Image 1 (cartoon, rainbow, N blue to C red):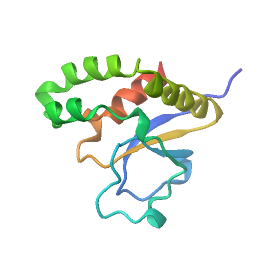
Image 2: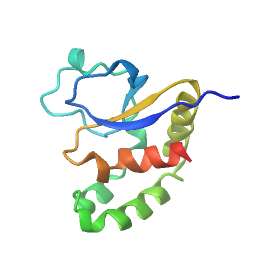
Image 3: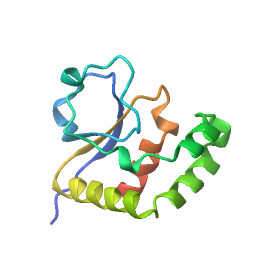
Image 4: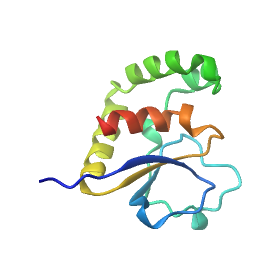
Length: 120
């Protein structure tokens, strides 16, 4: 029986937890005010982040999340994003994976969309 690994989303400003597993920042920009030494990240996969145009259109408006998710999933077919998503899938196979984002609402972020994809 294969091990079941958890994929979850956490804020960059939250203290790491012991069962986080691999901690991967998935935002395009570095979190404001967060020192790299205190981030406790294993990787920064900014290549998987949504396009600037999509981020600016969405602006984390909860009413637009469904459409954002649809458009972002389409962007994940871009070769560079698809390659990075495949890398995240491999990480998820080896242990717990925590996708890190700086947004104030991680439940309506690209990190949550990625987590749902990786859980399925």
